[in-house]
Image 1: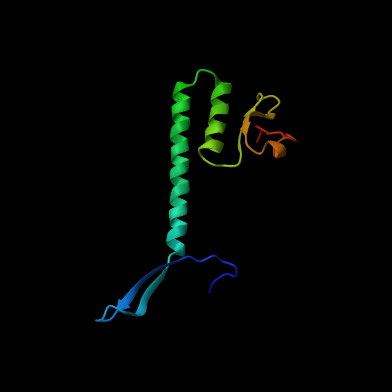
Image 2 (image 1 turned 30 degrees about the horizontal axis):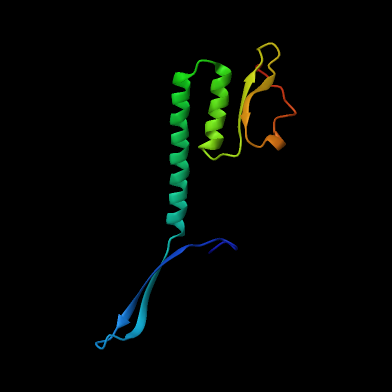
Length: 124
């Protein structure tokens, strides 16, 4: 049973049927649903894009000279090449206060989801 409003994709191959006199007398068409294949292709693209960004982040890590610049570069790679809407890296200030703060962020500048701040407990 199909869910309502679900988009489905089909591939259609059509060829003319020609008689001995060279006239088109009919059209033969074959259709095949390709929804699942297209979904899998999109998933593969997303996975490949994520792996590519991971590789670029590893390169940035290997060539980094300063932590702040590295974290910003990683966020830029995730949003730019990875096509994610937001990249946010938080660090814990120290063990005694355990306050999580923003170390780097790219994307969704108008709506920072972590702007309110929150506390991270390191105690059990």
